[in-house]
Every structure is written in structure tokens, then in C-alpha cells.
Amino acid sequence: MKKSGRKKPFLDAGARAPLVLWAVACADRVLPLFERIKPDDDRPRRALETGKAWVREGVKFGEIRAAALAAHAAAREAGDPAAIAAARAAGQAVATAHAARHARGAAWYALKVVADPQAERAWQRRRLPKGLDPDQLAAAGFGNPVLKTPPWKKPRSLAEIRRDVFSCDARLKPFAQQPIDITDPAWIAKFAGRDPLKEAGVKRKAQALIAEILDRYLKGPESVREKLRRIFRDFGSFAWAAYPAEALTSPAGIKAHLLLLSVRDQGNDPRDALVAMDRLAALAVEHDVKFRPLASEIAEISSREDRYGMGSLKDMLLRRFPEESGEPPPPKEIDFRPARGRRFQGSRSRGPRRG
Image (cartoon, rainbow, N blue to C red; front, side):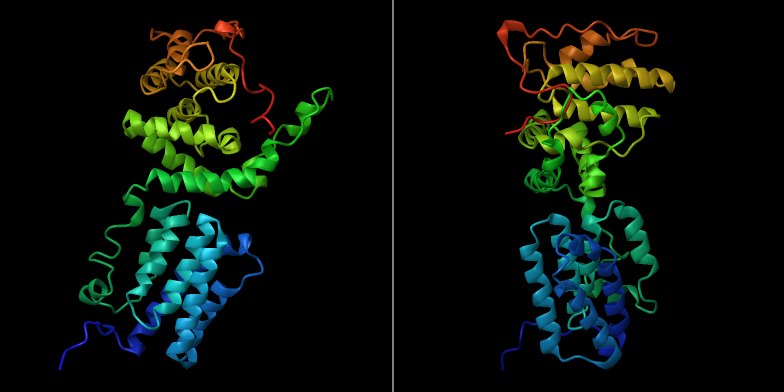
């Protein structure tokens, strides 16, 4: 008689129960990311409740399977990468009642969308059920030690990054395209202090994306850097609104914002880039940060394309802040006239153009 190729679960139902509760807890921590996008869709939430019911009183396999499939169906319909991962975490969590290896899936999907994967991983490890030996954990697919190869160590494809930027861009577009009446004397005061990322509900996700993009931009080859610049050109609302989480009071913060300036590659208007350079230089002086070495480092990986007739971003950085001793001088008078009759494509007073 031919043996079935399917493997039996390595834990019996009694031993599997605490692992189900652990997987449910992992998924529950990120489920609000789905519920914020799909407040009327309770399929992932019902999947977690089904998992808890299995632990309390026992639920037939058909109900477990139906709940898991419903959560994954909700994920396919979510349209937002973070919401998709949160719903899939719920589907994997309830499926742990059938096969323990699904617990790792719940943890893995949760790690994909949190702002601080390292801290989340530590939380998951602290709450892993006691009494499971390394061989049992390895059989469940966790590896030894637990979660030895976390997903954030594997670089995502640029297509995945582009998809997430597209998602944020769609949420930010209403803010970027909001009309501004510059004849109103108080127009600057009305917009001062506003944070489009926060108002659009994408701040955590956007800043995690920015951190990932800047890391790839700094460490990758020129071919990768050019593709990242292209993403910023294609999604102007995201490029306009997004900024790093690092404060502008340290070398790391100044460098992160310089890197973002390089990825933006002059944006819609090179004058904005010049103003941003001078602002960063002034903040560096204020906080005793050596600016010229940072500017020179970022210039070397910046675009060499003269997009508007005022030079490439590399040339702009090197001309404005030549590598020499001492602090940056006061901002120079900026010649805003484009060379060779080129016209700028944006406005210095706002984000991407409407239309």
C-alpha cells in the first residue's frame, strides 16, 4: 500500500493549543492595519476568534479551514500591502489549529508590516509557549534558534517597494494636490506644522519605506539608485510628503535627509533642491554637524543628469559645498534662471502639480 506523502502535525491538540494562542496574539497586534483600511470586513477578526474558540471548546476542522480561507480572501481584496499582510497573518494564525507550522506564517506576516521588526521579533520570542523543545520548534518550521532567518533580512524586490510607494502615494495625493491660494497673506501659517503623512494615516508605513529605500540607495549599485529615483518621479505625492524618521539634530539625521534629497533628484523644481540644501547646511551648523563631508559623500552617489539646465544634483552639491575646511558659508544668492531655455515643471511653494 502506497504511503501518503502528507506529514502529520508534530504536536497533538493539547500541545498545539498554546501555539495557536501565540499565533493569534502575533496576528492581533497588526490586525488594526487591516481594519483601518476595511472597517466593515470582519473576516480576519472572525478568524482569530475561531482560533480562540478552538482552544476553549474545540472547533471542527471545516470551520477552521473556512475561517482561514475567508481571511485570505479578505487579504486578496484589501488592496493595501500592510492590510494584506495583516489579514494573511490572521489566516495563518487560525490554521495553526490544524497544523502547527502555520504559526510561523502568522509571525512572519506580522514582522513584514511593523515599524520595528527587531522589537517585534523580541516580543514574539518572549511570548513563545514554554515547554516546546528545539526539535519540536524546528519541525514546525521555526528553525533553531527561533526565527533564525527573519524576513526583513532578505531584501525585497524593487517591484514590491514600488507597489508600497504606490499605495502611500494614492493616500497622499489629495493633500499634495490641495489648492493653495498664495494671495492669502496667511497661507503659510495655515499649512505650517501640518504633516500630510499623519493626516493620511500612512506615517509609520511611509517612514519604514523611506528607511528601506535610503538603505538600498546608499548600498546598491547605480542601476538600483536610478530605479529608485524613477519611483520618486513616478509617484510625486509620496516624493513630496515622505521624510525620514531621524531628527535633524544629528549626523545620522542630516545624512538621511541628504540621501532623500539625492533620491528626489531635484524633484519638480531644482530651486527646491537648492533651498533644501541650504536649510540642511544651516541645521548642521546649528547642531555642530560637519556638513561638507556628508555633502561630498552623497554627491558621489547622486545623479549626474542635468535635468533642468542648472547642473546635475551631484554638480549642485559639489559647487555649493566644495570640500574644504570650516563650516558652510551663509547661503549664496541662487540664480533661478534655467539654462538653454528649459522650463521648470513645478512650483516652489507646494508639492506636485495638479493634473
